[in-house]
Length: 303
Length: 239
Image 1 (cartoon, rainbow over the protein chains, first blue to last red):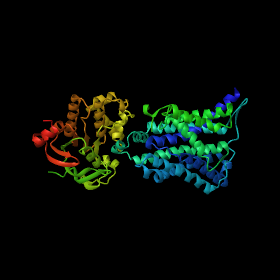
Image 2: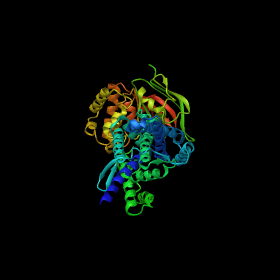
Image 3: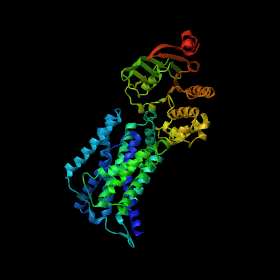
Image 4: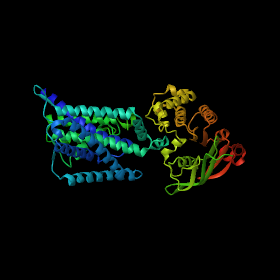
């Protein structure tokens, strides 16, 4: 029983992180019907910039006195950086191809993914970049069950970001414009919406969320590497497909399910195969219900 | 006569290799209702999309209210008072009626004036008030047409381009829509360029008309003269 509860805690942590990454896939797909295969690299870039900023703050001696403030500032700056990175990528790699076939943009996305991950390798080398360890110490113990501080931080931050995203998309003027662009770009232009700007903004928001996940993964697992975006990226993509690609609520649910399947699969079936479970789900969803849980044709939450 | 609010001078446009518009010239004066009639595929909708900056213009110029708008991007035109209700109405299907209306005035930031305008749209179209929180896609065809016109009014247009407002609607509802169009023209002082396959209806509502055939203007006259023209009667009025 203790093991089960402990696994639930782990599943919630991992699932929340997958959900944050999956949102970027699903939002971009919602507005321009592109699977942005470079999205995993925004997540990795988040981890990289995060470790860089935390390193700078350590060197400045700020970590000793106010570690949580350092984390907060790093998080904000990293999200901002990745948001701009994603807008640049969109401008260079996708916007010129918007009137071409969808396959052209997809191949461009694969190229961008390779370019970005190799860029990170060239910039910082192929080795693991260690994260500071002071955040992972401390926590609560209930018998055999432990919840460390970092897990609580990840839960709270994930929840805050998901709520903020929902408010933005479903309650704000900009969110209304995003939903409009997802549904009809010509009509959106006819009601004075700058569709290019909305598309860029969608990339920025998705990348910002992925960047936050990147930092948290770095903290949680203790290090980041230039190619860390690939596998979580594909798992988050599986989560987005499971939830119904294009659907925001679906991506959140899909992320939590993929996280749970991976954690419980590793615990009760085989730890060696932990990466396989997400892909089994991806194949099963594509085979049996390609529209996913919240199939995009029947819902109102598409962006 | 005063300066035209809209003037097209020898406007051409293509879809790939197909020439959709061949040197179209037309004028619309402030306060008018002008009809553009023609068969399916004559280029009526393309003309409206070219005016609105959606279909790129290859040659010629479009002047709106004294400003050349040929190269201005589409999303800036509603701000200038040029607005279109496109063919098929293009209601945002998964947004509520209220959201559709708010998006009509998307560029505006004066919250209280927007609310007042929504009320004004309701006074024209009481049915929309009952459907306020319903999704646009669940409305009937007539209701969607009404919503599309209401959404356009939310941008406070000076010139309204209407594409096939009667398409797919029952005759009674069509009559009502045309009453509303006249009312918008007289009460709100909105100039209207009306594209219709239903030539009879369109010309009766208009003061002047243009006839389009395979992407070119073949006739331009007052609505009464066009209605009396035997060629028009044979080709478009089913006689």
